[in-house]
Image (cartoon, rainbow, N blue to C red; front, side, top):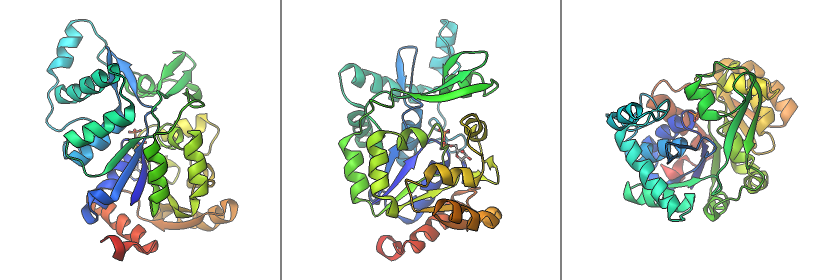
Length: 315
Ligand code: GDP
């Protein structure tokens, strides 16, 4: 079993690469839920859905959210009726979230809901939300006050000054039992190239996940979401800086050093390898980590499996 810790863009691209060489049954994903939000009475879980859509073949791979060829008629009508519609949800996507909301109202846990959706969408991988509790990435801004991450990123398009980032309800968050068993039985755990503050941060900062990863750091590796000091997409750089972290592969290494034994950085950053290794104790490899297409991600997947001597077993 190979397990990923994932947000909604960078790691799903890497997972696409793994899927070209491995069977879905051998993959599991522990997904960030701190992006989740209630909007117009619907509970939306964007990163979980990106992973569900990826494995079911429904994902719009141009945007890395939503369902391909979806229509937006319900959203248009909601707009006409005066509901806030800054968060884009297609009609089919909305149906999935309606299903989720009805299940929540029946008292079902996030874990059960994801399991049910996985079964209904014929997914053979194991997809697990990082916690059953509602956690939220929140951004304290200068002008807009304390806002949800989705408001910061989607509504205000990151055009606000950040004073602080925090994750609401993190202290009381408990893990689904499947998170523990999956981490324990995995031969390889991959902290994917996702945003370390609002995608991976909420996962590895759930107390029991942090403990499990510390215990299993030898079989855990991380892939940098930064190339040089820039993310490939999204607000990672500004969020890291707001947290007082340096937006560099060294900054990534410092965040992950207690949870993994190896970091893969980009080839163009190879001159930093020794310094990162000396400072953090992590084994550092440089590879091409920019996924322009699925083939790029497949190449990295093969190389990771080879390095870990898992290629022959899985492929
Ligand atoms: P979100 O839920 O959309 O914020 O999803 P993620 O956190 O998974 O995605 C954003 C992060 O993915 C950013 O830090 C990007 O730099 C990283 N990312 C996106 N594409 C790539 C890529 O091709 N390679 C690498 N290494 N990182 C990527």
